[in-house]
Image (cartoon, rainbow, N blue to C red):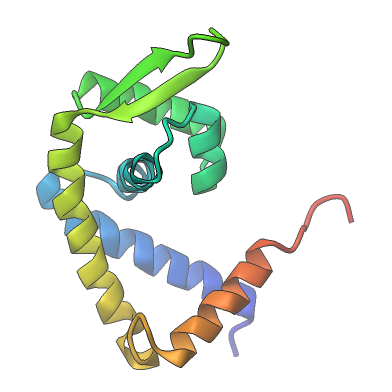
Length: 146
């Protein structure tokens, strides 16, 4: 019998591999997708996040976000600029090319998510809403320093 921790780990791996495969034709990895789609969402909300803010938003390590930002900047998908009031802070923005790449990627991942959630009644199903609440509760539960 599997434990909940084992099942969460297996589902996480299954999801990452599926997203990597689905995004391969767009030349994106799962991590790059998380970075770009999160940045697109924050931009739609009217913010120009710092690397640290994007790391906090995505759950990715700040050092990894910095590395991804450099790579995506070199690929012409993201612009990095020093904050005008705090030069230690690097602000991020999608380029026009970044928008062109991330929009079809978002649609691709949405289709994949629909397939994953179909057994629970789809993205708007009651079981999906309950799962989302439960996963959020677990993510918000501190594991360190107890």
